[in-house]
Image (cartoon, rainbow, N blue to C red; front, side):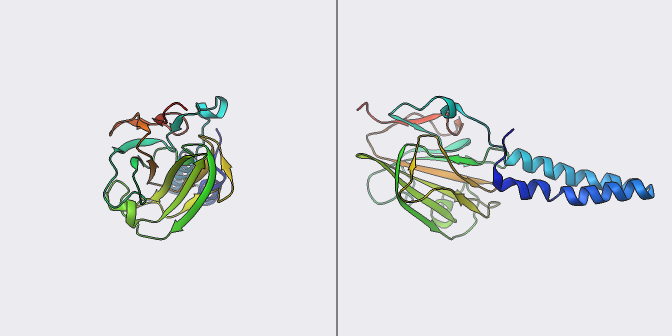
Length: 220
C-alpha cells in the first residue's frame, strides 16, 4: 500500500516507545510493559491507514475532457447553490466534500489546467461540517484555468486538522485527478464551478477522489 510521504513521521513516531516497552517487558518479565506497547502499535497502524494513498481510476484511465472529478474521498455536504458568503466573487455553483478521520486524505485536482492563482489564509479550526468553517478556517485556494474554463477549489482544515500540504503553485499545470496535496486529519474540500456545468452528485452522496464525476462541462 502506498503511503503519502507526509505520513512517515506519524507512523514511525509511536514505534519507538512501543519497542522500548516491549523490550523492557521481556527483559524484566513485566507483562504490563508489554501490554502498554499495544496502544502505540495501534496508533502507528491507524496513522498508516490515515496516510494511505491508493491508486484511483484517473491514474490509469484519463478523465474525459468535460469531466470534473471529486478532489477527495468523503460525503457531499453541499451540491449546487453556493453557501452564502463562501464562493468567490461572481456566479458559481458549489460542491463541498466532508472528509472524516477514516477517509483517504490525499487530495486531487478536480479538473485540468494551469494554476493561475494560489493563496493561503490562516484561520480558525472549526468543525469542517459547519457552514462557517468555509470562510473562517485555515485554507488554501487554487484557481485552475483551461482555455475559457475556470475551476476554483479549496483545501479547508477542520477541528482536528492543523496543517495543509499543497504541492503545486502558480504556473504549474495539473491533470484532472492528479495528486496535489494533503490535509492532516478531519477536513473538507470546496469546488466552485461556473453555472454552465451540470452537477452530477447530490447532498449525502459518498464520493471517491479521482474517480467520482461531480460535474460535467457542456460538450465542447
